[in-house]
Length: 251
Image 1 (cartoon, rainbow, N blue to C red):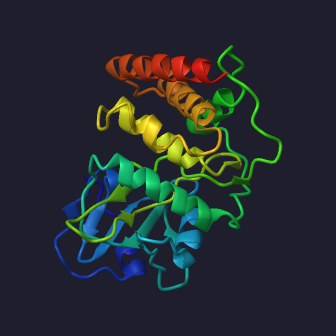
Image 2 (image 1 turned 90 degrees about the vertical axis):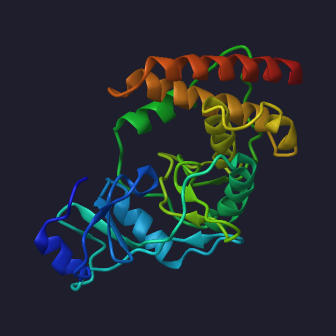
């Protein structure tokens, strides 16, 4: 468990309590009192600024915490208000949440910093795919910044509304249904939902094409990431074969 140094705790005014480890949703950070601290990613500042004022119907947002001198990150650390809950296999609910989140992010500017990380390269490669099952999307498709990891950033606690812990922006503006497609694909790869979820969300414009690009993104991440696992690739291949067959049927 990475523990923030004393000067970081002082900057965020953490309570004098014993640190406790947090899980994947909180970037494997540290809980101190009602605060969640974790190491900041390159998009942490953008995420914090957006989450500070974001409202999503039917969801709670983990609000960022400012340091004593008004910063969202200190020495590579970020802090957010902690909420009780856990990651869950509630894929349909999270896919619906993705559509509401897309509405809320419709007017939010994307991060301006140029990215060349594994995830940005994987995303670019996925959107350049030109297989026989692929077709171009409509030129009037609405674009917005998407959430690249919503299923792993949303926690549930009993009957309370889900909490979006963090925002992981796509590297470029994407169709408004793309976040939903990523949630569906991630759930299918994890075996957390039945394949017929694709039918339940068939009303989304170009959903089969968005699903193809979403699973291609996960394939490219698996190819590029140094910690990728071979068994994950087999699950990705199964899902991609299914989605290619669906896309062919729609052509």
